[in-house]
Image 1: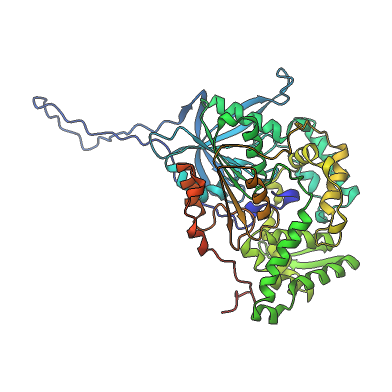
Image 2 (image 1 turned 90 degrees about the vertical axis):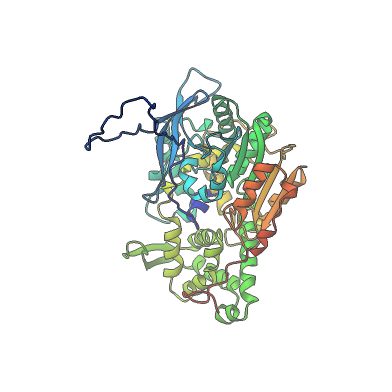
Length: 522
């Protein structure tokens, strides 16, 4: 889950160049008959090989060979793509139509399995086709025998995106969640969207129906749903509405249906920071170097609350001097971003200590590398359409969170924007726990600051054929960590979650805390 631009695909993302997957055509040599004359072959003759077909019929869909470009690199992945048209408002099928971008990573085997793996991206606001490069290492073992479906959820990527990047990029500190600024951004965003979209129809429920329509167009295969973060909400909602379409479910960074998005983000972050910083205070070298990082963080927060100010640091990409307002809100934003990944969380004590001493370069410079241009990965209007329709009316500030590093900022932000944001319908049972007899594999990271392991435990408690794996030392989204890709492959192939031998995960360890920028102590 990545609200207000905190996205795991920006944190520790693994970018790979994938080889072309598709049918291989073999052309045997023609052997002449015994009585056939042997004709001389001119030296200049060139033997031409027919080009591989550039279209592929899958169900009723005609797909064309394409490349999926990652927005932050020159790399791309071979795929087969088409546009899939759906009504924007299903209650008005004669009204505006929107085109959804659909891509299939084609199985390597000539005879692929009948079931299809479906990757459901996080956010809300991430696009499956743009996120493929980050998740490919985890799902690549499955591509040998299974097609992988990537459908940009309506409002994301190339599926009529609710893209409001101009409304967000005002050049000042977006992390402060100032009410007047948020209202202005939302109004600006809505003005842009009215030309091509009605935000009421860009909810999880609408996306689930889109996915079912795609399944029918593909010939009604059974789906192996792989949801990451917010994508786990989409997977559970699909399984509730269309159980006949589901063969198996993998949920990584589990969001229980009962969860109100934003409700306990502050608590989750605080608990993750305490657990991570306890590792430092329990290590003699780390404690000698940094004392109590948790205490230092809150001392820095209090100082910035009293005196927010402009700071300068060198951009690690352009090497130009950059000025930014450092405030209580921006500190919370950056710390939350660091906490997603074991590698960046290991830098937090060092970076916080440096900032407390007046050197903000390590903290803000690394944050710049992690975030980059967030508008390339997230569609803010999509986030508002989902949360304002599905969660906002259930949110309320929590007094117990007021003094945490994140506080009630995110809840207050949604309460500021959502009253004016057009809202779609929410089914009466939307927040009901998932009940299914399908095999389910749940994945959680020990130090996940967004979807902690207790969320996975909550979902598992209501299921029968389920296994919940908690990965030691890991953060948010763990499907690519250690031997997890092998376990996911075995699960989808055998559909026996309780029989999985997950002993290989015991080799995972937390990333050692950095004592200096050369790394951890010996």
